[in-house]
Length: 112
Length: 115
Image: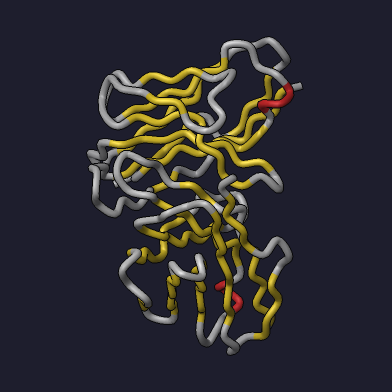
């Protein structure tokens, strides 16, 4: 069966450190992988997209890697800040007429 | 631009009552989606639309109906609400198109409780 797995336990880190979140998948062939941020009581907000033929994508303090052999994406936030505290969702898109399938998300808590 | 808006923000229903959730977008997006989000379950797709007048079933369509009579609006209906439909409902929209990377823009959500 198809599965998208993100760490179910919250990730606690100190301000200034790099946060690394993991997204693993099985029985998918994603053409794209996306990361979204969700704050409590709000809808998800798109952050980054990476294509199957891209190894790495960066945007300011954010970096996403995509390894189709390992079936894994890593999401990094460097120099993390308390304002980065939120739940981060990965989503797979198999392309064509398919729709996004979301993981359950990982909560990140950055303490001062 | 307001982006994606949802009406209402909160609603409490009794079992068996009906209601319609309204989603509106002002970005001229072709595709629109309805999700529900439950603790421990993540976002699950209920129904979606790839253009005005079209609808399609998602992962969890039972107990819901949808309509897309106008490009900018996507309605989600519950004909006979059940406690299992207690959830937070999110609408989203995207530019659409096959073979292109398509990111979604989400509304603020509707928190529905069915007693």
